[in-house]
Length: 235
Image 1 (tube, rainbow, N blue to C red):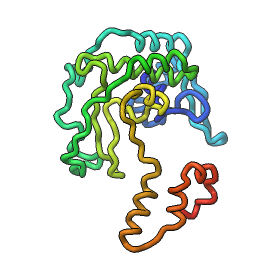
Image 2 (cartoon, helix red, strand yellow):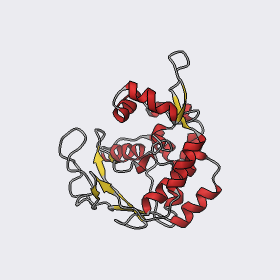
Image 3 (cartoon, one colour):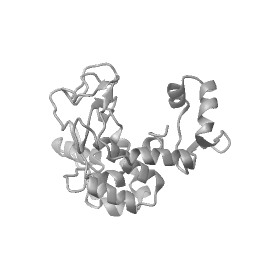
């Protein structure tokens, strides 16, 4: 829970982290153990059916300090898998999708590691006032100080039901954009913004059809984004 606290995947819309019942049961085994252990380390603000809010968990200050001290350790560590020293996977994409079928990405070969700009990320950590982002930055720094690929973090992807690839080893895709931007300073950064509209427009043109509303939006993305109701017909 401490490790996942700063992950945007579990970010509570108002405060702390929102851990689902499924997550808690998988982590602790059963509710009795969870109720005995978790209150010793986390402040819990209970959600409810009336408020329509998820329960929020935040580590006590002294526990958070222990995590920060651990993450700030500059010693080189061994990354472990099943208790053994980890090796870089032969294929960076799992052969099976989460559905159990063979992946449609066979033959693709993205990088097996993500390089980290330690100087930039350290500077971000020192200047940020957001507790979650500071912990997230320290977490990436800690992972990059490893003996397997020093200065980088190993990657592993799996195809999801949408056919998109998701990073499953350290859930780096759930790291907030600001933190990742600092970590990757000096490297190429590609982002396909609302790519489905561009794909729709291209496919329509191949079929001899026109998409004037979509094309207008694509030409004025930033302006249109400030007035979403006016482009509701695109969906």
